Image 1 (cartoon, rainbow, N blue to C red):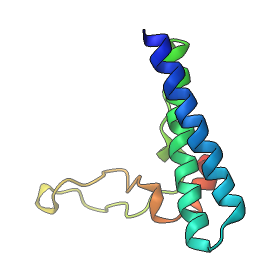
Image 2 (image 1 turned 90 degrees about the vertical axis):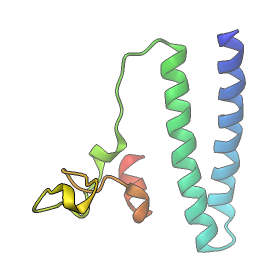
Image 3 (image 1 turned 180 degrees about the vertical axis):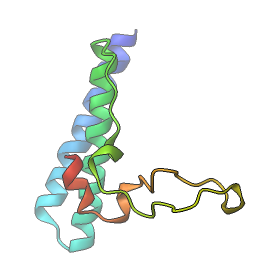
Length: 102
């Protein structure tokens, strides 16, 4: 049953990846291409996770290790709420950061 679910999920994400690549190539505008690039990234990560599950991989992948972190705090204090001690790992703030992960 798990093999069937993985095959179905892989097919869905592969289709989404292909359609996002088509949108990236055809546009028609820059915002469309940016959204397509973001969707490509998300689908590629999902496919990598599915392949890891399928082949019982014990691997670990953290995309934030491949980009420059923003907003690295000089002082860590709970009065500022929940902060990322090593800097902001959210790479979607600048779409050019997705190229480093790809």
